[in-house]
Image (cartoon, rainbow, N blue to C red):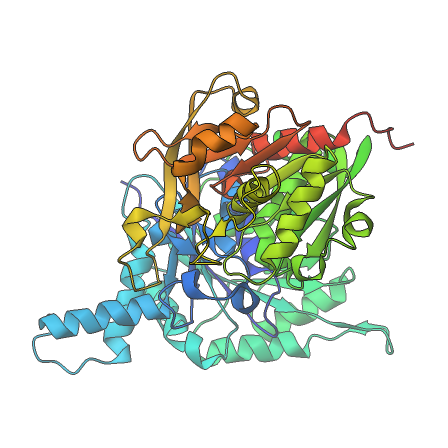
Length: 539
């Protein structure tokens, strides 16, 4: 078996430069050349996982098919590569220390003093190698969260330094992503921040093999030569990453820059056929040249931070391109929606989607949004809590259960149409205890859901504690809201729809976690198609 090759991606100067997008783009290019690639994220925060983090803190919590609550970058990995990630693809400092402390308590270290080096760094290296221990992958790309120089990132940087020598220099390399700002006042790019960032990496014992320079403007050859000279890399290993209008353009830009060739040469791997990226380029063509456009309102309570709904936003991009339609997504704050301003909030829209979430804040605004869509025959799509809001709204305004609610919001409601799942009732710990990961859903044949999936059974990812209370199911179905998707094992309701409505579907699961560039999720594709209706084409 050939040795697994390891590529580490670090960042400097500033956070949010796009290490995840660069990692995903490189992986896409290597995958397109015929290599089996996976990507891993090492996060320096002490939380075990982001499952208990407020979205304002860290953006969306992404869920893998095997039930891991992970960093949102794993969503990028899956959307670019069209392959599943797992628990092993996201590691946090909290998980590392928890494992080491548990080993110490068991006596695994035989009385030794437990230290950052070698015990913490050894555990980091073990986690890095874990995803590459099978025959499945040729290359493992590991993204290091944060920026070089952060105190919390130091053990990871040290582990990378050790890995370069443990695995051999031809089996391990470092790509460093930095910022080259353009000062308009002087009309020039400044390389000093990059030089200082590389210096910090050198002080930690790591010489980067490739530099990727984020920039708003094209870099001159002189700037690249200067960076190469002062940072001890050859000029071919200095790659620019110019700002683009869509993150999905980055793989094409990196292909033009030859990043994949530089990496393969450094790792002494064969240069297989150049990536054709046919499906990818077709997606970009459709995205850039829409034939129609729609206005869709996404109702949520974290709209100040779009990353809180990252997978949903990207799923609309996938579904829009599939329909050759420009989706103008308007993020609407549910706390600002009232019965009095509903018309001004929604009247100009072609469709309404209600986002997932937790807690009572903003819930009434979401329910009003559902009511507006239902009463005005406007395409509606509810995801997780969005489906639950649709159920509550229908119970209150169609079944006349005026007090209907979720016991999450009102434990004393007379009509708990949404209730805590039975297996959740004795749980006190919050982290990692929800219904998480992939579960089956059996779809009723004579339903819109079946027309969309054209399958009797699908597997979708979940992240919730509360469910539809099937005590009321007959009441709902007699009044016209039908359960068209049921879990075959637990009998939990997964999909609710109103057949006589133009397009009204709520799902308990998270379809956005499964949508990718080359395989847009059918629910998003068909929702956007319904929103398009008979709209005029763009001239």
